Amino acid sequence: MSEQLETYFAVTQLHARYATVVDAKDWDAWCELFVDDCVYRIQPRENYERGFPLATLSFTSKGMLKDRAYGIRETLFHDPYYQRHVIGAPLILESSATHIDCESNYAVFRTKLSELSTVFNVGRYIDRIVRTPEGLRFQSRQCVYDSEMIPNSIIYPI
Image (cartoon, rainbow, N blue to C red; front, side, top):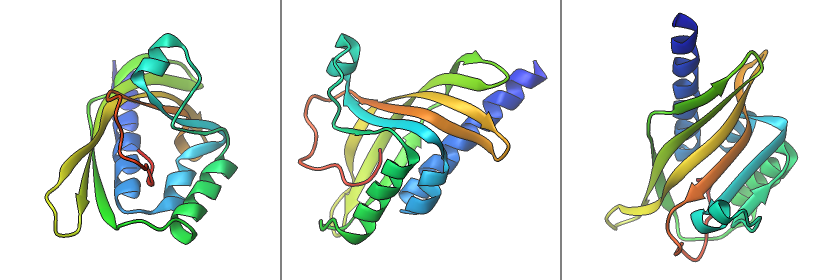
């Protein structure tokens, strides 16, 4: 049982670290939460459940994540806003010596300057996490959002 608790604690710490770096807009630290050969997708629930590959954003390597981070910092122009992630307790689906498969619910709130906070995006993370010498890292993070409607742009990672 202690090994299961250690795994559960380590996964919750990875999720907390993820929320912290994304909410702080620390894009370099966000990239380092993934292995080099990773997948990061933001996809509507309808497409995911029907097995359709169409995703709002889809990156297939850490290099692509770094390109996105560069774009956020250097080339994208938008009204400034803050994000705040609330991530539910992870459900560990499988745990082995090499990887952990888990799911957790999330809610992302957005606050624009001089406006009230609003619910920005809600859904679930479907993760494959791998054990590395540096600690747990995401091999795959699928952000499956519930709403069929999304804002006209998703700038920051979910």
